[in-house]
Image (cartoon, rainbow, N blue to C red; front, side, top):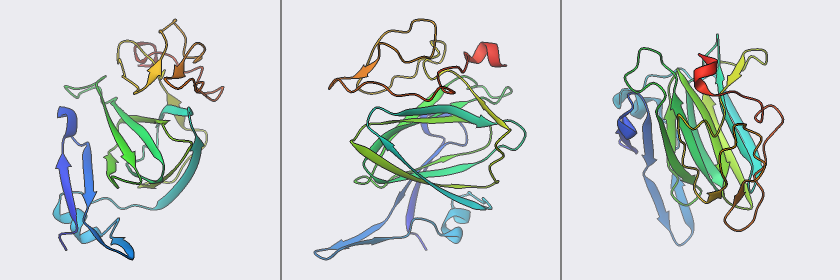
Length: 200
């Protein structure tokens, strides 16, 4: 017990949490508990996770901003290799922070985890040569149930770190790159999401 530290309502957005595990390290390496149901329940996070996912992305890849429509998923996200800037956007219509975002650096070094409850769009930008994410979900993925919003919707104004470019009315990513010249990479699907005001 007591193996995690939880920062609730980060960025002033109810439900979003940053979770920092206690790391036990010495000259041989380290050990940490990345999930303990009792610790999470004690912190007020009673989430029945049913699926674990893992993904790898190369530098400059931006995935997002995604959400499930009829089968929303709460997510617990962490990075096991590399670093990403991870973002959640509040889509809850009755929330005082609807349309607001919060972003956090997740890396193999800081070992932080980002808890995102139902009602949020989620995405991330890969900042290192490669990055591997692991995340737990409290519902199964339904492939025909995905929605999204434009990653660069000016009304939301996500400040992606190290990204150079200018909003040109589309989400194509053309003309955008990281400061070191790495071209921004988006899937065709992620190039075609519309702004939040057109989605809701």
